[in-house]
Amino acid sequence: MSVEAFECQMCGHCCHGEGGIVMTEKDQKRLAEFLEISVDELIEKYTEKRGGKLHLITKEDKYCFFFKEGCGVHPGRPDICRAWPYFRGNLIDEMSWEMIQDYCPGVNPKAGHAEFVRQGKLYLRDEDLLRYDPDSPNALISDD
Ligand code: SF4
Ligand code: SF4
Image (tube, rainbow, N blue to C red; front, side, top):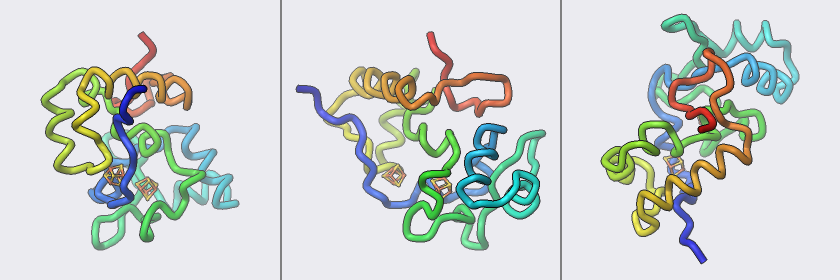
């Protein structure tokens, strides 16, 4: 049986940092539905535009607005949050995979990069997290 390449330890590191959470239309609809508000209200209250893309806003401490001892909107969270740590860079570059181990304690070094890639691609496919249009975050890979 293969080793788990990733298991979230709920440290919250990936919910910290300004402007990283890109909101596609699919993400906007899902989060608005979860919050029981309209997409327009979601955009106005909880997003800001940067580089032509909508991003979730952060709090003063630079954590995502919805971070409260974990993700406060877990069932409605955007694709980019669902896809981490299986981002393009970490899948194509073993060095990046090694580097994120300092940042994300959920990544299991014992699994090895090849296994991380194998499990990551399966996960992204199963969870419908592959890049599907030009507005999708660049960190997502397409099906190949
Ligand atoms: S950085 Fe990794 S272990 Fe920490 S919350 Fe994010 S995914 Fe989980
Ligand atoms: S939506 Fe949830 S998982 Fe995504 S950055 Fe915000 S708190 Fe973290």
